[in-house]
Image (cartoon, rainbow, N blue to C red; front, side, top):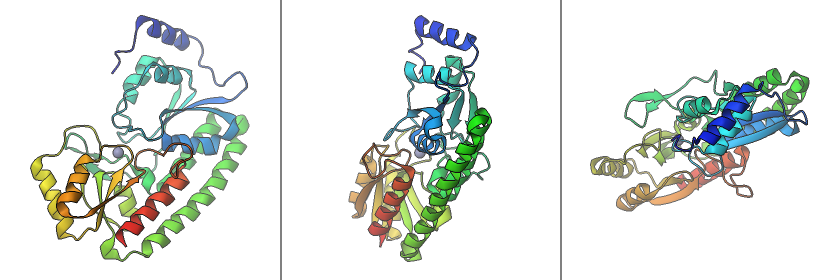
Length: 301
Ligand SMILES: [Zn+2]
């Protein structure tokens, strides 16, 4: 992963590390790194014009399998604040942080959220990182980001507070809207099958059952065996699941095979572990959630 650390890069990173950690850009803005697109969107909303934001894993890209490049190390070295999901989502971040020589404060923005346990890439039980699919968790993340920005840049704490407050009102409205949409769906139809196990918190909050997934709670690691695929096909048939859902961050080839063999539709793609590109109907967290819920309810109705 660190094959890009040429002597020149190491030297420039060391020079950066030896100077005092710059708290802000020359124009006074706080330098913030968000690890992936959902946290980047939250930081953009709360930080507004007061921060200079870099998002490492951008729209449509998979954080589980991300392979950092030299630019990502430089961004970390320059940052005062690094906003990360934690819960095992950014498996590459410890190494990247260490090799970058960064002195930025690392903030786990999911602090305070009760983790759900799930099967991880290696087959062991571990905390499920996909907290953002439940809007209540997004509200907790916004509070953590507001506090981190205000502590790092007290001069603008009131701005961050006001930005967070306005956004939380929109999130509360979104949460109520999701419940109302889902209520239109009979309980027996609230069944999800996706490529990887990303909707656990969504299912928990909005009353869905995860019938099965092609991959566990990470997209890293081996493909499922023929027996596992066959078992998923059987579960889809036995539970009368009318549709399965593709994702924007991973290959959906095996899910397509499951759909074909079970004789059901494959629908999507849902925005799962990343936002969509600018201009798309998943370009922000608010849009991503509305688009996902609309797609799910329409396909299962
Ligand atoms: Zn994931």
